[in-house]
Image 1 (tube, rainbow, N blue to C red):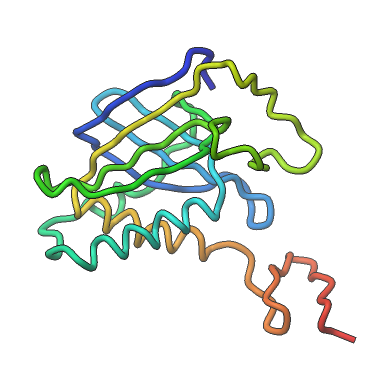
Image 2 (tube, rainbow, N blue to C red; image 1 turned 90 degrees about the vertical axis):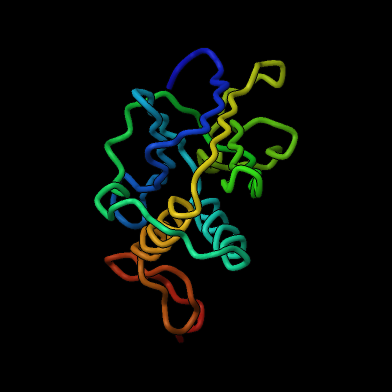
Length: 181
């Protein structure tokens, strides 16, 4: 991804979606934002996508239904190649005056990201606490937020099926279930 920190405020977002690269069990999750000619691909965790979806669902329950939504094909993620960073903290809110859902996406390494394990056990992120970190602030319509949460729920659910006894994910070749004798 790029060397200089990203600091963007995008009040007119064309696409806000999520997707994965890889097979279930080894998928890498991304948030993808397109605005004008710019595109940002933020590597993130499945749990972050699921949490955003739950929050957006709660916010939208208290608002009038969206009048329009992006076409389903617009929610397909393009292969990640744009500017981006590894996602750390997320802040979400609603701007009643502008009738927009506001989302702030911060690069991993901030004060709330001390225990972040995005690269897996034993792999160093190589972050210097003195480095400037990236931030992207977007404002999306209620329709874009609703489309994101529905799409995100499908993407998250498309992973490995859960074991009916322990709830853990089942790999294609099975899994060692702690509840099986």
